[in-house]
Length: 283
Length: 341
Image 1 (spheres, rainbow over the protein chains, first blue to last red):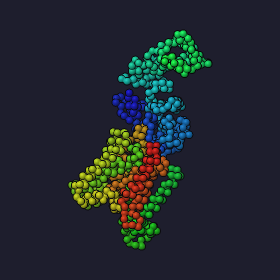
Image 2: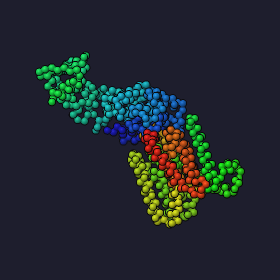
Image 3: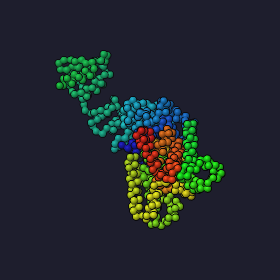
Image 4: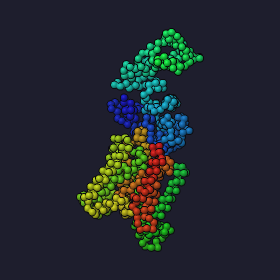
């Protein structure tokens, strides 16, 4: 919903459709491309070509706005490159060619490159889009750490609401057909501003977990026992066909699930056993 | 620049000078290297005819080979980086065909435009028409590149413009007078030996003019390795770079094609060879490296084409293709293009 267009406008690639963008109290149009590059560094979704570059060379490309016409690195530039490699913990990858890196490593290297560019603002367009869970988490941690250590502002576009709630200080949402809304993420969740992201009544935003859930009600039997496990019992029951379970008791140590049907009681040592049982009696 | 790199460049320069000497010495009439060495220090040749052979024929030819080698390789490298395509090169993207069309119009439709033979002989008419032709094709290809992001589509569009230009040339040939048609046919075979000293001056000046943007924009080409959007975010004026690339490659390919005819494979193969040998993507190294290898390879091809000791001279295009085609095939088969590039 226009996120990329917004980013491109902030980056000065596109002129604003209306209004004016100011960066450090100066209109964006008054910056030369090079001055702007010294203020804003960017990480995009696209995997960059140029697989023959080493990680170090890639990070050094971030110094381009600061170097002379041939792009020779000074002592200061070299220092910035090294500290960017150190901060992102990828010094051991320095001599690897970027064509050989995993998606996650490459994205971290791209963050390092943006750090080396040394702007006050770091903009990321869905930097975790094609990453697996661990890499996603690592990048988010890295970005938070960067923001805290270096005092740089990190502006990031994401589709992942949970991730945003987990890690951001300020959240803007762009619901379709409305203007942008912004604020502290926790406020926005509790004040129902995030509900605007949900297009119809089939889904709702669970205020407790910050997750989007189906509106469809599931009737649960009476559940007793360990409170920390109840959540997972519900999670399991939501996915299984309805059974005439009168009540359910779950025990933590040792793990056991006891269900009371109309006439008798069954005990299981794992969800797997319960699952097998349900399959059997449905036949 | 580290020691290894400096050493390779010194080695390359040495090889270039050696080949240059060999190129001057070999041919239908062999002139001993020692005599050429003495001649450089002002001692006249034992035979008067050697002076004519060397100064009026072999020296301009060797210089042409060096200039053409530099120009084509630098054009190829610029296009490969700008279009982010390992198969880009003046020949593939139809730039050479555009230059060919320009020359064909100058040579065969010249009467209609009021140019006599004498003007054509001066070289600059050929040069300007070839440069205009190649810049024209590049502008069209760039507009297409701007509309379609897919580089494969771009190559196909380039090939189509190439065949379009050939079709126009065919129509021109059909209506051209026999004498002019012959002039064009001979030109299109490609030859390094047809440049006179005044033409060489023009060639040299066009080369320097065409290389200027390359010196000024080396950093920009490095930024382009990350793609257009990242380059822009690094403060590079991508649009300016595009026009500099178009003018530079148009001028370099244009003047080379005008004076030597269309020469295949150097433009596409040499940048890959220098990437492989220097193991880098840094254009500070690749531009001089490609220029050096381009000069060496074309000079070597020319030395081979004059078949030492024989009166026959093979067309230069046959030699570059014989050498270049296997290199390109090997590159495609052996190396992982998208990763190595």
